[in-house]
Length: 181
Image 1 (cartoon, rainbow, N blue to C red):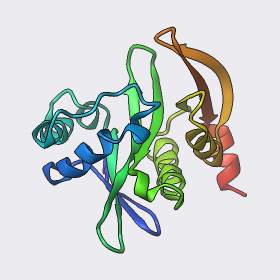
Image 2: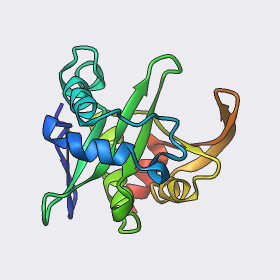
Image 3: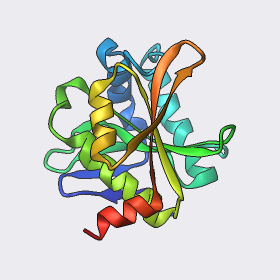
Image 4: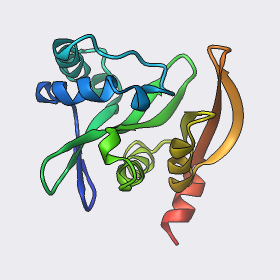
């Protein structure tokens, strides 16, 4: 399956080692990382190892499920904006959509634009029945993106029994009813 996606303004593609400085910058911004639960990369080399492993590892999302988080690149100047994409959670048996963008690119509609293409990819290419977004209770911008993607809150939950979150979802019937409008 092709992990090269495209929108009017954006290319979405698997990570490459040259993304390392941008991934390092992205994951070392406290504001960007505030609600993610992820840890920063210790250095650019660690970010490069991540980018290479995410693509090449035989047990990666790319290899096992033909999906994963993918780089979002602006067509007009090849700027690395962040990432978007699908992730299969085997232990809970669901696929989620995630997105993370450099702070300097917030507010330009890139999360929504790339997210809409990822949602299309989920239902039309992967023929999923359901797509989930799990968003921290206080991450209002990400909640708004989930809503713009046609998702609705299904329930609230606690990550690791301590952080409040909202479980958004969209099913294939709702997706195709939106597309046909």
